[in-house]
Length: 241
Length: 166
Image (cartoon, rainbow over all chains, first blue to last red; front, side, top):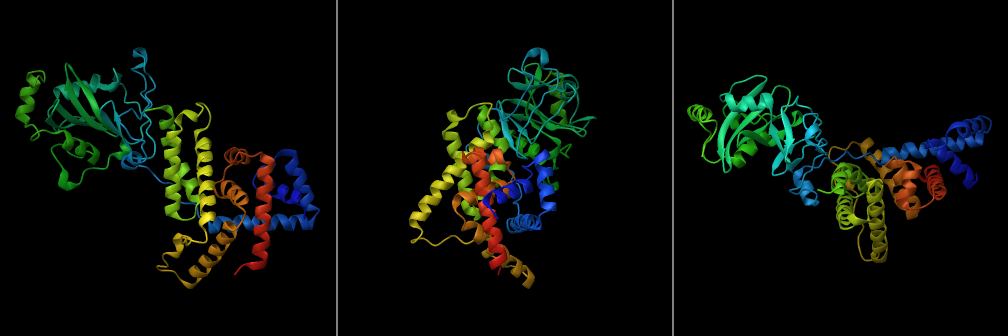
């Protein structure tokens, strides 16, 4: 058996021989038992190799591993397609790779892989996500623990002002923080990462993912606001300081 | 974050798998993977935007590994080879498991004993399921040369399987 024949056999078995060449080779094998046997032997090698070298499971990389590799930083790990103002009300496509990744978005966080369109609930404005329409209304007007399909969770003070958690039925959860006359969204978590926080860690209006609650924990100054405090702030148009 | 870094994050699982295919020992595979990512980031300016980052990074990985092989060959008499991961544990193994494991280990030894050029060609194409053009690009050789290395390596394994399986 010549080297050339072995080359033809491996190319045939690897799917690198196509069209007329493939048909011609199969015709040759049909009329040449020696060639057919050699092809069978090579096929057996492939089978044995695949058994001896099981394919390892695909590794997923979380934020800590990305950081270790020097691939996590304060930059944007997102693909925010529509950058121009005129396109900002269209689909915002955010892609984060490798499963649950925590990545900063201009000082904020997006957790998980996202290809989403939240029906105009948020827009990108000056490099940050801002609540619009229904989400803005919910954050501005609703009390803690109420709402549908947007649920308001708890309200709290952070170093930069008042923030509120929110969750959308079947959609995203996150944090909105008062900024001037609107709400910026420094953190969003996508549905795949919406594993509810542990029962021991439930706060008012819970069923929020652990990632959101952890972020609250990192930002909160003091205790969550009471319903009375929330109502007072709402009356003052959220001018808290 | 640069375009390269964004794209690199997307291909990390593929590169990690490739490192695990090239190197049998898990620790060595992880080391190869991490060295590759560090080298890619060092040489960020060398990547041509629009070209396939995974193949470029895989070429870097291949070169790191070949340097490692040369270094190990130089020191081979002085160092013990790292055991394979499946030698480190036989928990719950039955007789047939052990027999199968012995056969698999024997075949892997035959593969690892092939000339490095044949071994890498087989690992990229057969075990990592790359096309000939992709593998040739990583190895920086013509496709005809790749085919030749694949054929010679696999023909040798076929002979060894027929003659020497334990």
